[in-house]
Length: 411
Length: 227
Ligand SMILES: [Fe+2]
Ligand SMILES: [Fe+2]
Image (tube, rainbow over all chains, first blue to last red; front, side, top):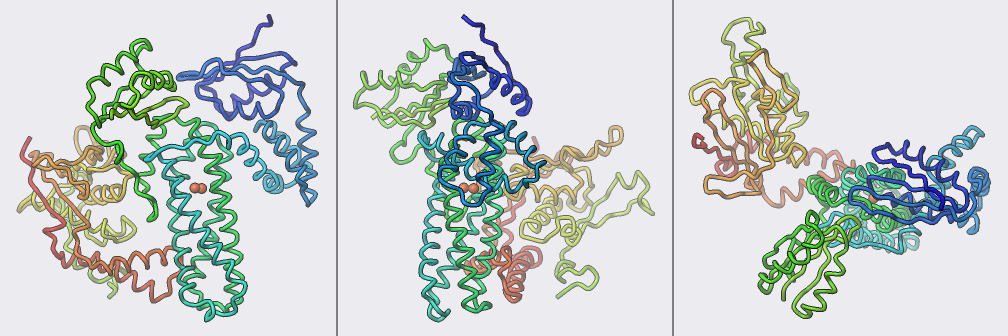
């Protein structure tokens, strides 16, 4: 058997990690393999490599202190630089066909930031502007990541910060829907009189809710994004931040027009509201979709429980929007009564089940045992199903990838 | 009304200043005469904070009332007062309150002056505590902000409780202020609305500092039994 090289990138900076990983991975001969050791879950990298369709990737170890993956080349390498240049040329030539877009998506799923950066530099030297590259690639890049993630969408219960953000998204989307309906009526209307006071008030209300959402974006930018960046997920939050800036500009203008419509003649009012409102309705909706399906999903997969607690604390400090749904406090209506928490992680595995049932036997109806574990306690669920059927309720509070927590209520 | 000298609203100068001895300045020869007593005015506090608001006013008053109780018939001494703010510096308005306390009393956070030899240490005299403030009866009131002032020379201490919700203001008035504030911040307010907002805003500050309306309901100073 061939000897497998091991590269330990623990403790290295993002850039240094890439410098070690990609030349080695790219240099693998067909059938060759190598092993990589990380201090965190290298999921983004795994997706990236998988998308290239040149590798087989398997986890040899998944945390909690280190992650080890094995990368095996199953197909020969393609010339990424040449392919990328060709793609960009096609993207630049105005009309982008669905086929080109699909090709670009496939390609971006597989390229690493370093190679991308190098090729970009080359193109810039050849006279392509940085903005041009970015604007033709950003959306496709995100779309590529979305496809990798959308199938495994994770949802989390209150009061998890992502739960709150997603609930707020629902309210924002509702407001955008109302904005859309307002915009649909506008073309037929010829004067403020015809529009009527009720509708001008409606627009003020919509604008108010749009600016009220600033605080939601602030929580994303100050509490969540820095944590993602600390895990080397840099570009996606950056793109989201740029979106926020674009929205803020237009929200402000729309707000000003809504509140001072009397200063405009109607045609001008109509034009501006249609333009600004149209942009916000379309782009903010797509922004929210990307967050729900890509950004938050990446976050849920790579942030630790400890980091989520920190995110929650930060969010609490920043505060919430007037429309944020109230958090259900821990132990809500169907989960009230005393809760005992048992952290299984520091215990040797053979003691865990025994300890759980020791506490379970002391619980009165209505009381709950919350367990925290470093793997999915599915086997335990089977045991409960077999031995305690009808006497318990099983509710996941946290579903990995590092820690799992379950509330088991005696009924 | 505008104060011609400072440019601030007239009533700022009606607020009595806090008086202090400053042994550090004295030792290093900053004064013409020994025993100089310094005045720290509300106007100066506003200059430091960059604005006047109910928080700044509340902090100013808290400090004033606490020191009256800690130094009856005496002049308080800067650098001789340790303060605990029950809240975190990046939480709500606690950071601003800490700055006001620091400006007035000299009590500084970790970034403060180290001292000269054994004297004049100002750093760590201002502390933020995330522990909940518990009153004599052992109760926690999350609606109330709580600060402790302690004299370092005799270890006497007082606890100040500040509850902005109990400051009398009419409901419609605060709703109007909220509405106007959003318009002002998003630059959609007319000059009249801007003026109306500013008058409402400053009106609340004046009510706190000058009229001190119903102050016993929103600002309480209690002695703490010596530990
Ligand atoms: Fe966002
Ligand atoms: Fe969002």
